[in-house]
Length: 384
Image (cartoon, rainbow, N blue to C red; front, side):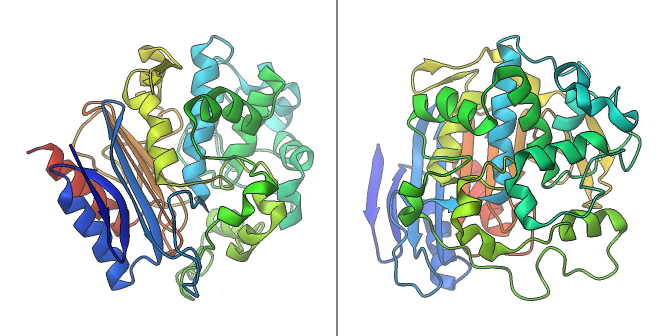
C-alpha cells in the first residue's frame, strides 16, 4: 500500500510505514536546509518511496517536479563503476589485469603494474593531473586521458587509498572504451539506463536542458578548495582545475562525458539503477548481471586513511564500503556521495537502495546529514 501525497512542499508517495521519511524530507525543505530535492528508495526491486519537492532554482521560480534532474557530481562514479562491473560480469574486463593490457600507453612512467582494481578503488596514485590543466581540458577526452597515461603516480600504487575525485572517471572510462569501443556514457545509456527507463545521463542531450535544476554553491569558505593548509595532494585535486559550480549550467559541462562528476539524474534514477546491485543483478524484471558479478563490488580492495580526504576509507570495487567513512547498519552495504550532498546507498542484505539528489550544496564531497537523516529514517522504518 502507498500513501500518495501532494503538499505545499512535497510530492510523490511513500508506502505505508514510511511516513517518517516523508516528514524528514519535508522538514528539510521547510527549514531551508533544502531548496529543491528528491529522495527515492527501493526494496526487493520495488520502488517504495519516491519524493520530490521545493524549487529547481535559487530564485524559487521553478518548482522541482517529478522529472527534474540535477548534476550529482561524484554520485556519477557509482554509474561508471556499475558499467565496469557489467563488462567484468560479461567476461570482457578482468579487474586483476594490468591497465596496460587494455590501454598500452598507460604503462609509461612505472605504471605497468597498476591494475584495473587500483583504478576502481582510488589506490592507483593518480588522484589528479601533474601537468597544469584548465576546465576546458575536462571536455577534451583525448587530452585528459593521455596526460594520465603519461604521468607517474603520486604514491606507490596499491599501498594506500587517495580519492581520485575527477581522474577516476577518465581512467575507468578509457579502459571501458578500449575494451568495448563505445564511450562509457554510451555503454551506460545503451546497456543500463535505457533498458531500465532510468533518467540518468553521463553526457546529457541538449534536448533535456530545460529539466535541469540549478545548483546552489556552498557558502563562501565551505567549498572544496577553501580549506586552509591544504596538502599538495588536496591542492592538486581541488585546484587543478578549480571546481566552479557555475560551470554545471553550461552546455559544455552537461553534454560532456565526465564520468566521475558530470552525471545528471535524480533520486529515482539513482535508486532504481542500483536496484540491479541490491537484487542480485535483476531490476524491473530484467537480468543485467549475475549475483556473483554484483557482489564483486563488495570485495575490499584497500583500507586506511585516505591520502586526499584524510578520513578513514574502505574501498571495494568502485564503492565505499561500510565501516570506513560511513558505518552502515548492514555489513554487505556500499555507498558513494557527490560534492554538495547527493548520495547513493546499496544494501545487499536488505535488498534496498536509497538515492538522494538536491540543488542546495554544502561543502561535503561524500554526502551530508540531510541524506544520512533520510537514510536513518528509512532503516528505522525497515526494522519495524
